[in-house]
Length: 401
Image (tube, rainbow, N blue to C red; front, side, top):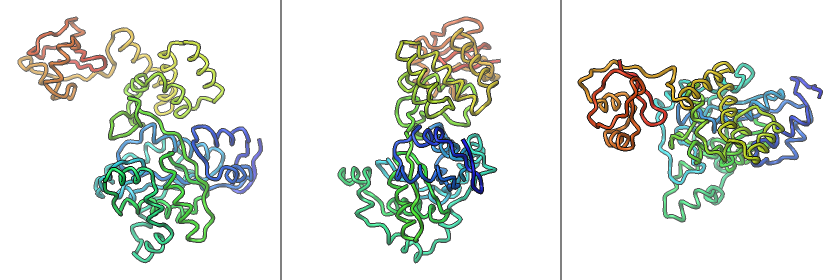
């Protein structure tokens, strides 16, 4: 391994090969990108993130982790916060138009964005830009110049647009604008490489089109694997199946433990710093019939360690085992002062432990409500809010005082 150049980049063929393959779906153009990485030149590697929700989850962390891998080799991480493009919202992989966000909604979503990103990226060495810096100042002439490089035929060939058109659903002109604006970001920051999810390929290639229009060299494009959520569908804020970087250690640990067994290896590859050789050994253990729960415990420790530290990860493991393995209770159990004359169901609804009286009746009917201290199964739907520790279902607890 050796390094050279100003500023210095690291040339390590093994690390570069992993960079180009781990969690990667497609690279356009791979040969050109590999040659650039081996040349010692510092590349400007762009990643755009729209603040369409306040949480960055493990799925959205995948391109951030890849950006960090480029950064670790000495390349310049260029992070674009899409505070302007979030108003339009990316139509990628959507079968209906997303609602446009207001400035107030975007600012609320942005509140903890950099805090979350800093858990992965060294922001002191990154270039962080907000695309409102140039897009909010773009006049109609400049917009026309940009759009002149795209055709309606190009835009409507997009897979999800085709599906909507075939189903008789509308495709709005503002949605056609999004890829062009994302491409213009690449022009403004002189991107050498752009990263994104595999559903972003159309938008990323639009960056090449825009750069060509403005007489610049065309960026290479790297698309990355999609992470499935806790329910086996694409991890998404709208589906509530996500593991957020802001989840506390116990919540994060518990969510990882709840993923489907068939996702264990993918999570190790995409969400941890385990080496590929270590993951290969884990894969062989799984094939030999090792209990998946043991591997998920290791996985949960690795993920929680990244965002909360090693000591907190070990605490989360102990707390999980005490709570769900030994019939104990969490250390951070919710404590509430309550009037003993009130029905327990009212307290649970007030605290958001159960969503409705119908859910309460179902849980009571299933025998899923009980007191731990003192030990008692609750079968009466009108049970009063007596002092004690209650377990609701498998993972919900409350202490009434």
